[in-house]
Image 1 (cartoon, rainbow, N blue to C red):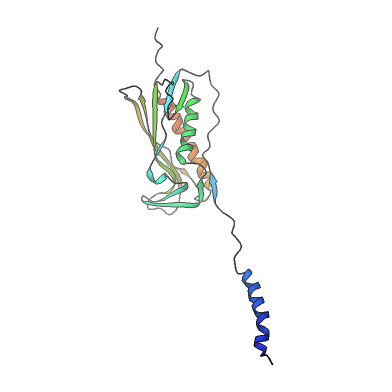
Image 2: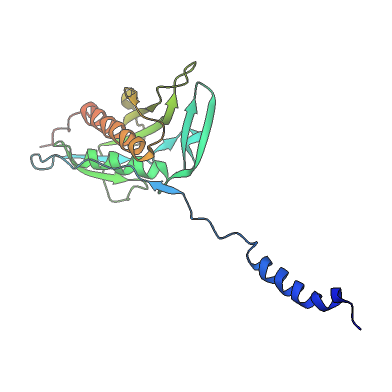
Length: 212
């Protein structure tokens, strides 16, 4: 006669196999959220001017070259946000807003993005280096997070011997942020980039008088 243990083995094995099917956890929902910088609607103005501008690709501080949104804790600590990411390269979003600001300026007739066309004559070239574009907590403080944005721009003549005709460091006022709403952080940084665009427009030299 078979021992009861062996008689129960097939049933026990079936129970274990069925239970094993439930051991594998269900896949978790992807909690990653993606954000973009938004450009303001261009203000209506007079007919396009005559300035022809070349816009160089935006340069970022090396630590900003990531799709993760960056938070700065104090002066030196950076925290990359795995679940809050830029939907496009940050330099592309900043360049898009700045080109739109320039193209809508009354004095500007054309903005050429880099690489510049061989048959497109330009009056000036514009370059932008972004130093900060992040959420941050001031050094020595555990609260009061804010949006931080700063950059340097140059306006240069073109030709075989280009010269810098305007150079300015831009630092946006730090705007309060709750530290959690990344959509709001993207909105605040968008406003800062738009203000940088307005500063570049204000620094543009006047168009050269056409030769008779």
